[in-house]
Image 1 (tube, rainbow, N blue to C red):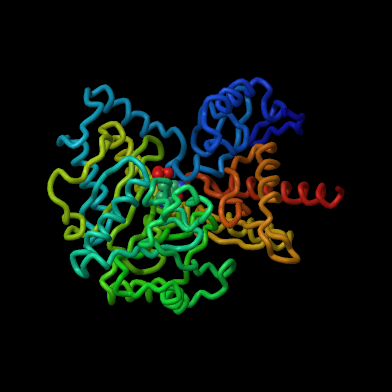
Image 2: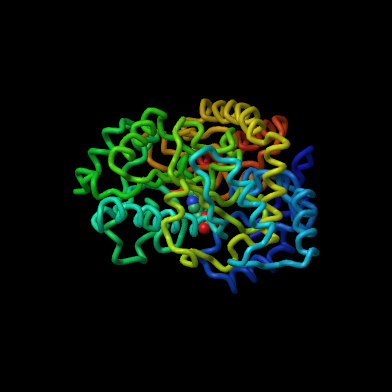
Length: 452
Ligand code: PMP
């Protein structure tokens, strides 16, 4: 229910109504009535328009955006260059091309492939991140059969990982509750702990090998290892040494290494590709979200001999490389490179980390801080037992929203991680402002809790 909140009027934020806005309830109720329940759960802000790193509703409120619409708008919301490219392509007179050749899809394929090092030189443009993961599974299993027979079909991935919600991508994921509906889980999907150093203290590569052996999986059965470059739920990276050993292990056992960069790509982590932090190359890498900062498009890139294993006509998806989406992606890539948004993410990311470290130092409930560039996760835990405190994270995100700082509701181990992912165009000043709001929100929610 709407409640009066202190009015806010700063350079980056403006809150001038009760929250949620009473006039927005009609829209919220309509969504609740007609959309499935599973789509719900985000803070009750009805987005009207968004620009740069700010989101506006229709009633005069403005939020500093720390969500990027869940890691989509790397180049900023509503960039004029992207709007112009979309309009130009729409007016040009080609709104769809499916599997038929078009110049704009060819241009995007060439452009995207030019961004990856040898030997990652073939691309399949798709629409969603989940689809790219499904194709990675197909490539890994096809390759496995080719080099090791039908028994080489196990995909190893990581506990707590998220790779999408379709049947295959959900099984590569490592969140058991999301897989309950499947019933007969494919035994060819196996998870090992992610070496984040907090939820899993042991970060040695030995744990990878030991867990596989405990689960009865022989290395010869493994056709691929799929990992988020950083874990979406916590923003944690694996140790570099671990990944170097993983690369060697994959090479030694003819298993493909897949970095899912649906979140980590396009400058988010302070480098164009997140895997650059590890100093290794994957065999396949998947992209989505930040690829266009706007319209639905995704892609998987890999070594030509892997990407070309299937016969002509056997890989397609109706909206593959839709011309308008291609135009948006081309304009987006231009912006990311021209404005060196990966560099900005690295520089401003330092300011973000400083602010978050300050918060972590002040509140013992801020248990685990991880991230690089402009992605970070701050996990709320019970300071005595170290257990996840999802309610605290939830309350803090809600309080911040009331103050004009927008984040999405907690993800990560049992929903206790406050995830921070602003557009990569954000300034140091705006990041400091957001850190201030987050700190105030921690202080207020904890004080109210203590007073209860
Ligand atoms: N992989 C990762 C790492 C993701 O974060 C997501 C989406 N959150 C996906 C895959 C699935 O992408 P989509 O929602 O576009 O299917």
